[in-house]
Length: 272
Image (cartoon, rainbow, N blue to C red; front, side, top):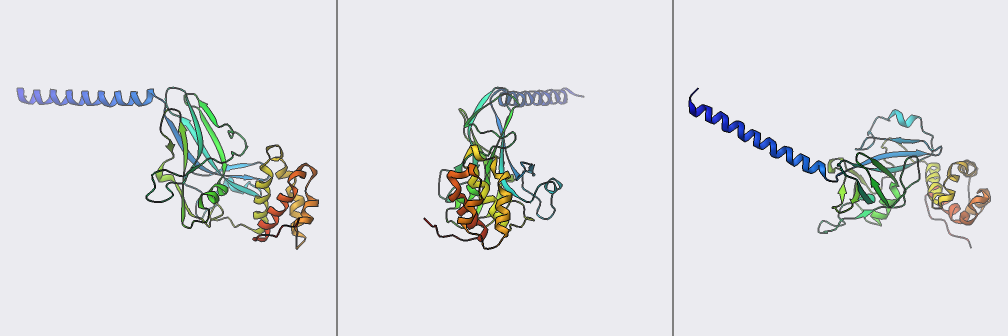
């Protein structure tokens, strides 16, 4: 091997070593700071409080997952936003919610909604959360109420990603390639699921009851008398008021009208 070849080998090895050192320093720099990972996960909560999660990209289009088979027939769709501290230092995060992109293609800002977190299992209800290294937190949101708020009469598709604001940094969103895309007329995350009038009524009942945190547990225990009332035929809001338990006394009229309207799929005139 002549000197020129040796010099070339040495310079190539030196350049590779220097490049590897720069990459290593860059990785150390990224790991030394605060970094968060954000995931958007579909979830279903049934009337018994059982929670089932799906893959990030959503439920399969044709095959029903086995985790769904153990659930009861009465459920609501939830969006789980899971935030994980991937860095080496603790960090505080806030504004954990859903990102619907830009309102118009020419808009600069993005449309994000947090909503009221749902109190289930290990779900977090705090506005600001401090995460230690490797720690995760999940916030569960009532997906279709936020989608409805986003559309507000606008047609077209919804493109949904999870969003979080790490303290001292820019907002972080879940991966673009795992975003959810669906038309505004869609009512369930699982394509194979059919929405019956009774299921619409349960979801309306659940939403109306959980607006009062102290009464959230009543959604399960009070639903079955409501269901029996609806099955009698030609239900009316005034009759449903008498079926609701005393614990919901302050919201009986609102709950009754919400359930009847969802069951019949139309607005019901209010009777004073």
